[in-house]
Amino acid sequence: GVYDLEELKKWGKGKNWCPYYLTRQAINHATVLVFNYQYMLDPKVAKMVSKELESESIIVFDEAHNIDSVCIEALSVTVNDRNLDQATRSLGRLSSEVSRMKASDSERLQREYQNLVNGLVDQGLLEASANEAGFSSNVLSPDVINEAVPGNIRRAEHFISFMKKIVEHLKTRLRTVAGPRGGVISETPLAFLHRMITTTSLEAKPLKFAYSRLSSLLRTLQVPNLDDFNALTDVADFASLVATYSEGLPRFAIIMEPNGSSIPGASDPVIQLACLDASLAIAPLFKRFGSVIITSGTLSPIDLYPKLLQFEPRVSESFNMSTFRPCIRPLVITRGSDQLPVSTKFDDRGDMGVVRNYGSMLVELCSSIPDGVVAFFTSYSYMESIISEWDGMGILRQLTKSKLVFIETKDVVETTLALDNFRRACDSGRGAVFLSVARGKVSEGINFDRHYGRAVIMFGVPFQYTLSHILRARLEYLQTNYQIREQDFLNFDALRQASQCVGRVIRSKIDYGLMIFADSRYNRHDKRTKLPKWILQFLGDGQLNLSTDTAIAQVKHFLRVMSQPVDQNKLKEVLLSLEEVEAMNPPTQMIEAP
Image 1 (cartoon, rainbow, N blue to C red):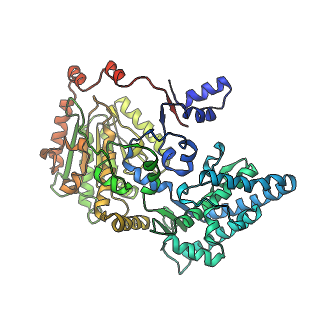
Image 2 (spheres, rainbow, N blue to C red; image 1 turned 135 degrees about the vertical axis):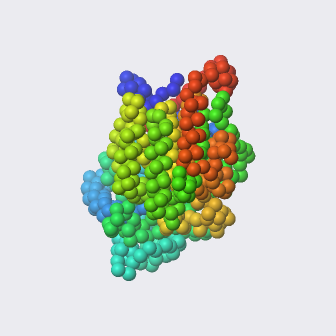
Image 3 (cartoon, helix red, strand yellow; image 1 turned 90 degrees about the vertical axis):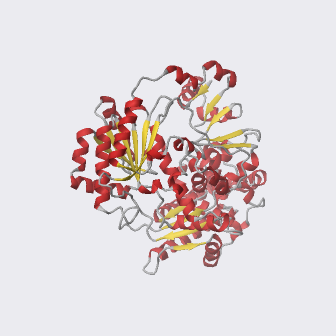
């Protein structure tokens, strides 16, 4: 059968078995496993969960439009003052624990080093036990040399002193960045490592083993709450990655910024080890498994992914939507009712004419569309500024006459509460509009099916913040090594985010909805052709370059057509019967990972 987490917990409780270890054992016998991406891509977790999967296994990455970003995040580390202060406290606690154990059980400390070496010889890295999953090294196994741990970190007290030097060096670098002569500094891992070695008199070789050595020590000391040592493990992970990937082509960048906080005026210097090459995390999977499938409804343009992930696809295909009626209506609105162009590009976003036209567009659409409407903006700051202007113009008062208004915030609890009330307003027949942000929580994980989302409006093109130093470093890396032009990648990334936003509106064969792209730039060929094929199949010349009033006429016509009863005979033509599905897929056992 198929067991979700709650059923596994209930079954384990009835048998008096731990559901976690039960799942760990069941993985080796299951036919189908449902994982989060990190179970395969993040070395910290993958070596614990997926290490015993056979090479004949078929790996499927669904909703993989952001797979390159997930790969990069799995091998990136950020440390700030708070992390380093916590790491210092953790080292003090470790020192006390080591002293206590030397007095009570010195033999265990003597065995620890031999266990560490044996693990490194067997695995390439020390393999953490199940309950210390968070302490598997972030460095990929083939990149670590199979050799004994250097002598100057073998003894626990020596290793603690070694880590203190690393922490103090990082604190010194942060003080320099935040000081009066500081500023943003970008270095290669080799340059950063050279400066660390020169300043601290440490050697590069022991740094490679910092994470594995810390894992071994924590296990030996039987620390009850591993979460207390997260900051210290980040520092050890940082050191191991810098030392391991310092040679050869620089596939990482170290960015030091005097203010990494999102709060204006707040001082929060950070050191960021940013992975620039998405292929690093996924390459072991391509090497190990014979069949890896990457799929998503918004995997477009599809030809850029092989370049980003550095693989040669055997099959690459994009499909139309199989449907019995034109259930989505994409519209590109380039002008307001006064025929002035609308766009969120930097030069135009402060124009009061654009702000007014966007507000009037939203009011007219909400007056014509029943139930739920979702509007996406390019950033939180732009959404806040335009809502403030709309309030001063009286647009929000007009909007509330037809629908209740809910707004996404950076607070997860507030946003969850707003979503619950949005659904209640739609269920009651009052109707609601949800104002949210591309790349936010709502754009990725929330579905607005049926009456919760009769239309999605995308205000602007959601480009990344191009002044980000990490993004600049990655763009330069892609241009230099993979010949991917900066503008090509930015367009690709913005259009996949826009597709992900508007895709919230359609969730089944009988569902229907409007996809409204409100920006004159979507009318350009180089932008709209990067939309997924299943959207483009409904985007004809008659839906391009529209003004607000002509778009409203199309909206009303589309809703009249879609409100007619569903033709069940035509619906059956595009659906498989239960018998056909069973003939194609014999019964299998499925286990869901925790």
